[in-house]
Length: 195
Image 1 (tube, rainbow, N blue to C red):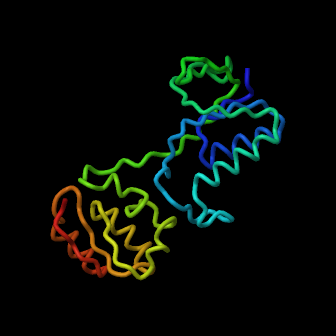
Image 2: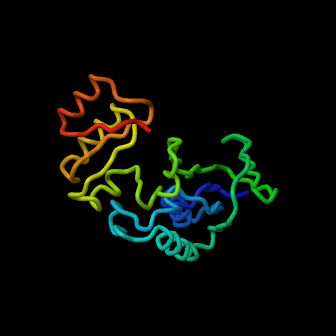
Image 3: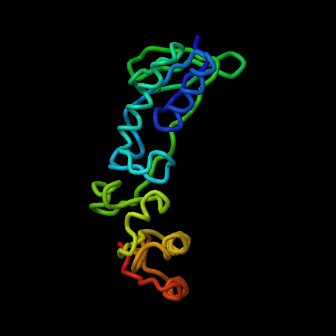
């Protein structure tokens, strides 16, 4: 019985495993090998790591975890979680084995739900991005396109307007209405036919 099973091995999961190890708690960390930033070449907006390849950060963190003999890392995914905080948890792994823990830390992060736009998926993390804080600076002064509905575009325009060059909005759910187009044009943004 582990004190905790940490599901996820990105920055949050690695930090959780490190904290548990430093408190001499037995922790099992599960690393599925699938990461939200798996296609990203460099991380940004993370103090002390700006420009670091994500794989390098994960490898360094895993090396640091070896200093704590109460932490074990397994390269496998969790398939099922059963139990409760009062009785403990059973976590079934991808290989069919079962691990038990008093607590479970879900550090799986988020997944990007990409619109069904032909050609977008292969560009994801390389030329198409989701986070203005992580990738806006690298496009300073350059023209960009925002893919999405007008209300979301307005928020991103407010964040990216002072950073990038021209902004074009490409709606994914049909052409912009007259009111949306007028608001976006008032912000200095061009509208393009929807995809």
